[in-house]
Image: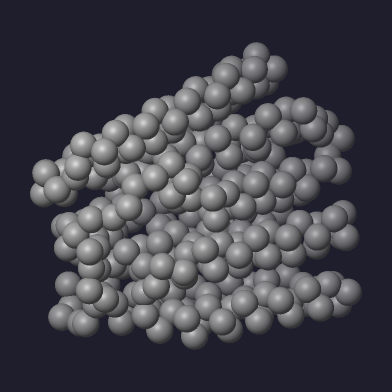
Length: 292
């Protein structure tokens, strides 16, 4: 890692159910599902019930991934020995909650499989493999610098067309994939804001995330680059519909704030980036409603 000044890290972090839930990230799953359904709402075979079940299942999978995320801390020998018994209990409770979310998602998946066939099973298995590969040993792609692109792929170009397929029973049109690629930009930005915030802590504990591998200065540049690309992409979307251009004002205002705030890692960066995901999702959903 480049020898750059980092925020002085704490050797431990606060564990809680609320913190593990990462409520600021839930708009990702909610809007991914909503956008996917809106892209196929005009399809002659559109089935809202199946689409909603797929969308809810995807949010449950995201919540499961959030709750299970800290389980890897128990698998890190250096970190695990510093954890108190109370911290271990909270991590185990969060892991249990993650498992329950996964069971609920599996129940919905079973209903969908009964309605749509075995393709649902293969789609669900693909999503489950990617979710577990994110932060569970021995794969733990997050610690290999691949966590951010993996989640952007899973929540965007993989999950959104899968939801669209569940709603129609047919292979999604190219427009669905284009909208999933567009929404994957703020998704990736949100995930990287977490890594950028935790760069000092992860470095101290030997977690080689993408931010740790890049170093603080390069991570700041990457965050800002993703931020600019997100704004440009949504500007391009709305430029085709002049009536929607005023919706860019709050997006631009928040993006400017985030650009300045990204000067150094800070605890408030991910929640504020989550607000940008919320705005981006609202803008994209509104554009689809207006142009369908």
